Image 1 (spheres, rainbow, N blue to C red):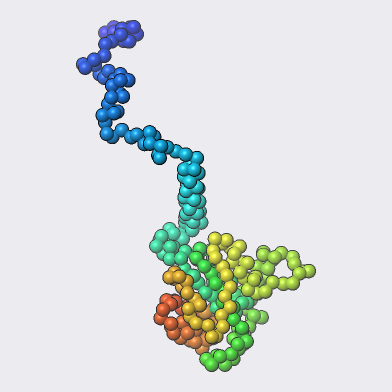
Image 2 (cartoon, rainbow, N blue to C red):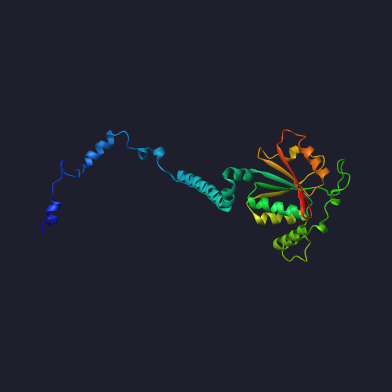
Length: 259
C-alpha cells in the first residue's frame, strides 16, 4: 500500500514554529503585556461605577420585563389581526387601531349591533356608544326619534338582543334585565377585550369638542336615523373646524339601505 501510517507519538512531538500550520501559543506574560498596550481592550469591570450591582440588575430586569410585555402585546396584535393586516396592509390597520368611532343609533337597532360587532372584531381603538333621549325634539326633527325606528319590526335587532342577553347574562329571570346600553357594551367587550368601549350621553347643547380624541382619528356614525336628523348631525359636526370628525350616515329599511 502507498499509504503511510502516522505514529501518534511522532504527531504529538512535531515541533511548532514559524513554518508550522498552527502558530505558537503566546505566554501568559505576553498576553498581559499586549492587553496593557492595546487601547481596544475593555476595562469596564475594573471601574467600580460600571460594576454590576443589585440595584442595577433590578433596573435592567424591570426594563426587560416592560419591553417583553410590549413585545408580547405586539405579537398578540399581529396574530389576532393577521388576516386583516394581510388584506388591508399595516398602514390601514394602524389607522384602525388608532381611531375612535362614535355610534349614534336606536339602542335596539340590528344595524347598530352589526356595526359594533364588526368594529370590535376589527380592533378599533375605541368604541363609544352615544346615548340620547329618543323622545327629544329639536327644530330640524320635530317628531321624536323613537317614531322613526320601530323595534318590533327589527327582527335582526331582536335576535341580537336575545343572543347577547343569553351570552352575557345567562338565565337571570330573577334579576332585573340589563339596560339596552349595558347589554350592547358588554356584548362588544366580550367580542374583543382589547378594544376600549364606553358610553357617552350627548345632549343637544353639547359642542363638537366633546368628541375630541387628542389628535387621533374620529368617525361619527349615525345609524337608522331620519334624513333630517342626519343632516342636523352633519351640520353640527361641521360647525367646529378645530375638531376633525368624519361623518357617516347609514340607514336601512327592510332589504334596502343607503349610506
